[in-house]
Length: 483
Image: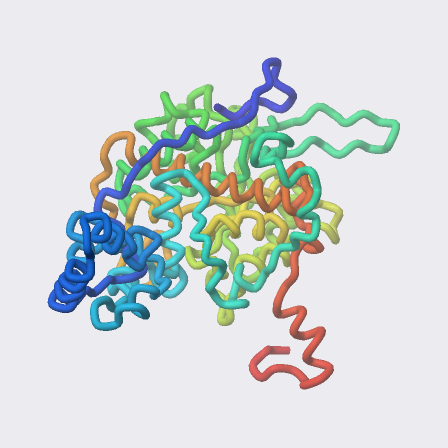
């Protein structure tokens, strides 16, 4: 379903993203490697045959293999174990230590980098393959807390509310967001003025931020554009990367322009959003640009570097209604001696806008380091209106890279050959899985609209703040915790 204009459509129907199986091009590595001793396995099989009095006994003995996940249910049993099904319960190794040994798969350990953990990469691969929420049924086995998004625990105290059923269709939970805002009324008796810029409504709070064509190649960009058009969202990309699509994909493309290239071409009438590259020298687009493109919503790209909050506040005061904040691919601040994470950066700029009575006048799009479905609601409750995903889309396309990858313009990844239709379906599956998990969190919080989650830090607990409140009065400040 494409994004609709502001207002209730005549024939209302639930927003839905169509999913389909899109299995990995190559076998995805599992978390575990199953090592079977052939000699010991054949010895065990021989003993089972000797202990069986009939064919029924033999079938029962072989049918009671020690794995409920089907790792040894292949034609030749343990001699060709299906490692992708292993969940690491270790039952087989405990019951038959001479036959089976479970180890961490070395290919699994090589996935991602210092920020992108292997479990995050594998989770995205599985979400992109099926479009379903990944459920292992073994509980959470990760760290209790960590840096960045792992420092936030969401509050589920409203889990008994009726909206808990939103994902199942009995209650409707809106994930729609608006880009832009209406002018603020002068008083309670004065009607708001007509908006000077259009308001673009998207059905989910996720957009694509495409990395340069020279880094990821044309097939990946084409897949993102196709997925964005089908899902009704947008793709932000450089102006030189969208020339061939402007005519047929104008509604979902957001070209990034600056003072040199904004007027060098004829922009199609169907384009809805354009983005201005904010620098210290060029804070706003030239006045003639707004007159030549009166029906276009202008977004402003701001790199999250030291002092970026002042630039955002100045833009809001000058009438900007949509600002896209861009961190590096690890979600860290650009060019800082002690970089802050995206969560801290968002809380900082959100507070500044609230203090200046400017927050409701501007839409904030946050990007950089969005690596899991849970990062979407966490970024929104820290102060964003919606998020942009970049490396996560490439991970869904089974892209791999060597070493740490922070700068989107350098150290390009190895994007595989992408079959027609397969790549776009993988991205649609990812969007569907992430939206379903967002609905779960909104339902557990008792919220019927994702817009109510913006800046609601009361819906979350921050581990570092709790530790300071509880332990500093008893033990003093932790070493290396700063001022």
